[in-house]
Image 1: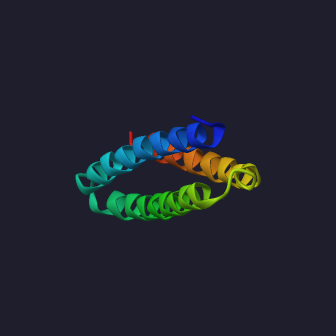
Image 2 (image 1 turned 45 degrees about the vertical axis):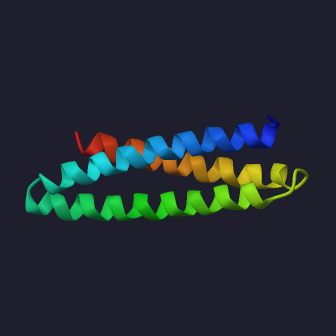
Image 3 (image 1 turned 30 degrees about the vertical axis):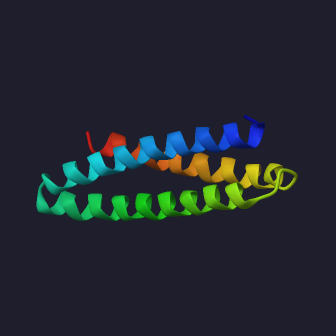
Length: 95
């Protein structure tokens, strides 16, 4: 397995973990009071949008040739950090 493939697998595994966490937060939001549901729904929509963006970036990475993927890595890392912070923030607010 080359570095690009290993990086892709790492990103996909993290994305799968975040997807499960977003689904859990969505379930918690449904069981909360009406005012909280509105706020949680907004956060969940933002997380879904960020997750979809991350999925597109993984697809770009998969389609990139071996030389170009390093250039995409910086953008991926930035998107990943943003999504990570957003999931952690939402998690803390849903407790």
